[in-house]
Length: 316
Image (cartoon, rainbow, N blue to C red; front, side, top):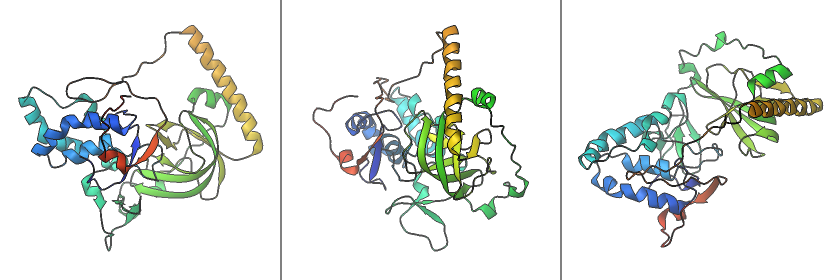
């Protein structure tokens, strides 16, 4: 179903927590007849973007999701037919859970072009794929870049304990660019990961600022310690985050702060032992049969696995 998609690299686990391509094949097959009926011309693209998501070098941490508008087009075209057979659009494919184009990175058929336009600016994600960028900075009427005023965040133990950052890295700033009117991408070369809830590779990674103003401000070639948050596997760079020029003594200070934070969290847990969070699991199937998602590390795989079916696939 996905062999004709305009990408040849995918990543597992996918957006639906399938740990292998074999498991994804079993799950997506239930929609094959619906795709063949052509109730929506974008249904196949949408399903493949969910089950065998595009993997690009710029987005190593998180596969790119399909856009909310793409999901709505697929749902609006096919849900009336599904209801005739007593099925509804699966909750796990809910359109409201997907990003809006002007607020984040997402993929749709219109975003992919096969030839470099003469006057259109593009971002080269792979040798075969060109994805159009958002509006140029000069077209952002609401940006008001000259009005940006960053508040100074106090570097202290109190701040660290209160904000409970979930990633801390030592990195060198490589570049700062604007992807659209309300998003800035700061590419940094990670020298060391001091704290993280996910694996951060020691390579160049993007930090996302979901604002027209970059706060705290960073500039190319700065050697810095960054304390901030991860959101949906994206490393964010927000006004509430801490950024300091790198010094050796910063590492010792961070270790002291982190030790105090863990002591505070342990104390809180002892007082409220039932404060753990539960999470939903399961894959989207019209027949509502659930599987348990794998907790394995994300891995990049080639196209060939998408076109082959195992006679005895193992379920994750």
